[in-house]
Image 1 (cartoon, rainbow, N blue to C red):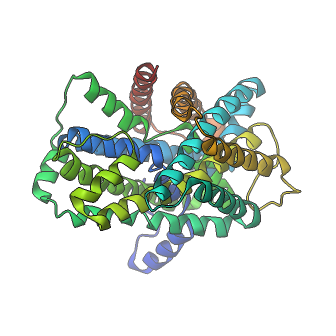
Image 2: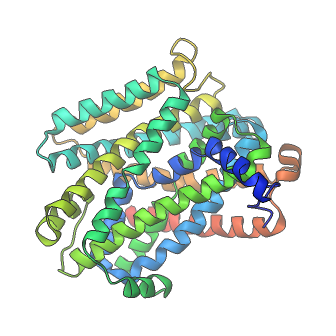
Length: 417
């Protein structure tokens, strides 16, 4: 298959292609794995706990949507050498870009708040106060981005991806019936109950967010990946998608076989970890709680970084982790502001965090259709993409996925309101 096959696929070229792949790998895996942030883990846990194994079929369309959207983001960045917001400003105007960036900042601040709340909740499961864990977490991720280069930062993020293994280990610890799980996953079952529809919309909606397209494209540009390595970048996207859906699979499965089986309903990832302790033991509980902390810390780093990349590219300011604070003051200033505001708000007593999270989800829902449409219009411009623009078959698949995702997102916004 040409879309996935390197030009040199002979045994002699295998080691060369493998070496190139490991040089290119990173943006796809990191972007996909941030899907499993505090909100994502809460959604997947609740799906398994409330509906059991039959809802696990949704993992398959989630994987398809992720591959399609992330591949286009990656290809657009590799071929043009520019970020998505930069291209939107050039082709659709500064006014549209400005309003798009305002919406992106608002929704991402809400998302980062949710993840700092995830850090607080996860560490409280280990008996550590949020007044210790949140400031330390905020300082760590600020120092990581401000003081080190993109190559170093990417390595730290890749290591963070490995810690998602805690969810896989916890899944094996409950000794599942693999045949039954495979049957439920491969045989879709559907219900017209409002609660079921809401959960399906939430599962698909939480798998893709506007910041992902911006970060994926900015990351491949920052990494300097060239068009001749596009096939390897596609494998990076596929590897990232496989990694994230495996984690989703084990989170949903663990909660289905423990919490659902015992009639335990939950509202957050914190509830899920706490409920697992008497059912599956302290080790399963500890792994689940550790996964929540890692995921929240990871997302709290990536989402502000994505926002800073997007806004600075869209407004024509200098950006990049490889630049110094003096060379890119707006980039680092915005990153710092988002981290500080989000962490401070989480520490405020009686702050309506839930309302802020719902508001960010609604803004996210309104923003996503525009981002997807802009991206599809850009990737189909012959003068911009040349021979790398979408073909007819891929366009049918991509537009169908975009329309379905937009429809699901609108449903999610309506139900949230």
